[in-house]
Image (cartoon, rainbow, N blue to C red):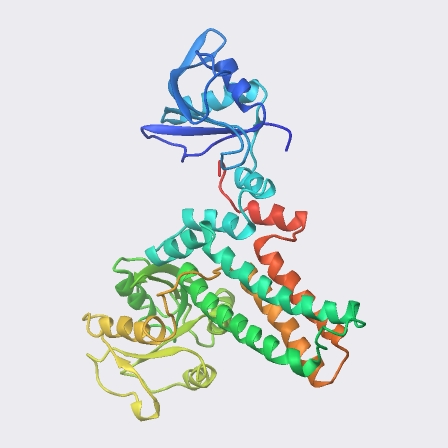
Length: 448
């Protein structure tokens, strides 16, 4: 991190202003080379008007912000150049800075430097990108709590509670000769571990809810060809997203769209109609549809009111019996042929006439938003990496409880507790690998 990096921090295109960010020990002196005024004596957190120049040529009229370490995002000297928006002028200013010694930043490198310099932890770093990509207000609230350190405090408190248990064990192991130290047995330590386990399990549950809030609910629309799946997708999205025809097998691959209900994103997926077919392309689409049942959070299974239940549909009904599902009987404007007595619960609609669509949204709210997802407390983790590490820590705690039940030596119990403590440390980046950082920050946008 000895070099000075530069990147465009705003979206490249037509606009009033573009911001180019420079960070590193030579950032002020580097920009000073191409600025019309002396910046070497400028005070921190000041703004200066002038021109960016390439030798004797004026490139643009700009405002230059000077921010000196350590009170900056990266804890390095940072210069931000506010130039006129537009592809040509922005790229030219960037080109001049690169010619004078700056290096083009990698995706997420400014945030990576903030992490490595101790300005933020790994949760706060991930929250930076999550905030930028938030698609709903609830997702924004989760991200801002993580960004301001509230979620990190939750993990730090867990680690502190666990280290107290570990410390008590170590005192007993290392200093058995001291008579004034209470002997710590497995029976005495079990209540503390059990209490910790309950807290961790609750955090995992609420974190999974937070992940749903941030990433949305994956909803697969399943059914035979011409049952009205594409029409339903279009009706829910209120746009013509999927092609609708009377020809069976029109949808051969998944078609996706998003809507937001009460702040929760629904990732709607219209799948290929499930039926036996000699068409190899359609067969692949049908296989993807069946796999989508397993990977989705919610299945909307559509049936035709004017047709009898097929063997394939009976198989699907059995396959989804234990999943979150909504069974839809479409085409209620046509003759009743379907035997509905075998259906536990269903919603009758006519996509063609726009009847009953609102009932589907109400049922989704009942299944997820009103019951399963509690959104009053946004101070929880919301990404797969962090939740996986929490579950890993929980597994170690379970191993510790199991060791106690088997009356294993207390130092064996301590090993499992330390592994749990280390897993929690990985969540906030107390321990990490270079490969993890490279993979994580590669997903960031340039200039952040």
